[in-house]
Length: 626
Figure (cartoon, rainbow, N blue to C red):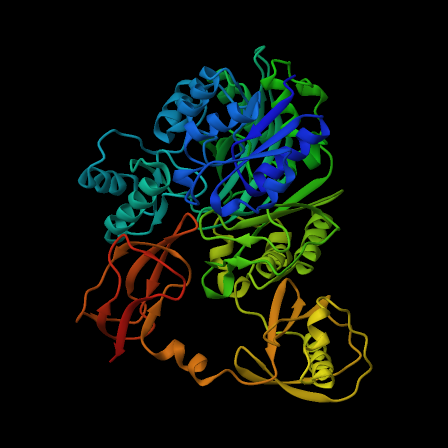
């Protein structure tokens, strides 16, 4: 076994790998960009090496810098984590050529499975069932449109080098195909440097089911059962679980057998995931499950597999990379209970899931479940990387118990002032149809209005805000308020009276009561009262917003909701626009965000140029209402 390992990644990913390395007595080495100099993963490591500017393409995505850092630190092995360079075959070759141990599959396997079209063709040859579609080399718009019509709408466009939901679009009708193809190609080129796509028939009630596989250099390949990742938004996984709901023994044998066959076809070594799409319109059946792609790395959702098997998959990666055989044979790998994982993102569901950035002045995760976090209180969520800040994982004897435990944990999340999707996650986990196992990849979109709606505070939350406001009033003086020294204090006052407060700029009457108060209350430096309840942070003030704040939304200025890059401009000065019409596209935190007209009117000015980097709050377009 090697004695030291460098993790070529950041955040939660690096911290997760470091945890196993420490337990095994290995020295850990972190790499970090200028934006991550004070990041949690840097503090976790025994040693840390700077590798360049904040932009990933100038730091984390530069193989030469990673290898130089390993050489400088004396690391014997490189673990790529998941994301960034983890599925880069050239990087794997470079690591080995530098005399270092590569903790991942052989570069040949990465290449064989890295392009979705080639991988599907290979799987067809190996006898693994694949989704019908178009895998051709001709990438002209005319050919792709013709093939989409042949397949029949709805059709799915997918980047051949894609992953993580990037470069993927569902197209409902022929009239929308060209625009969707252009957007897909743009995102694919930005994310993977390759804008080629394939087409697939769109399964109407798809379930996303994947199988964890592991191989070693001695020819052994095993599966570690399946995971269901069907709860998705914009093709990105939100909640994952193991085992898959409704999976019977016959179907499990078929899908895990196909997964092992797929791994054997490329002489796979290390951790990998074979992803399948299942038609759930008539329940899970062996003849209605098709191969989609293989991820030649560890997955974000691997903890649910660890919880139901009792295994440490990172330890397995280390041992296999060191040349050891797999620790267990297939018949020694058990399946116990049910595990569910929720991805906690720095984003605002109530405003279209826009990413949220800033310093985490208050950051508290529940101690009742496993929490794999990439940040800590006082840290910063920057606009340069993926907005996922933590994963919460619950394990129980039954699926119902695991869902309930995780929903309660999401309710208890406290983050400020960065916004999160904790309340949204809790509502997903509490949804009756999801609890009943009636799910597919369209579940969130069908129920989005209810799941993402801005919630209202309960009477208990209003009571907590009222008591806090009265406590503030009692402490007001020319001297600094002692209230500011009491973050997260607990409230236990008796019923007394009521007061007028403002929530989102609107007045509310908050009355004291003896109802159970929310978990905690925080006062900000601006004398805002933040009440944490059901995964949400309700912000009260004792005074109405200033006139300039109240009128900002209606002045016709379309402002950037976050730092980002302008990748498309769809209008010009003098052009008439309708409400909801796309104005421009902003790329931030690895995603495209379309900004639309809030009302019908005329474009007065386009204040930015294509390709411009803009800051949060910058005016992008000015409109005049009709």
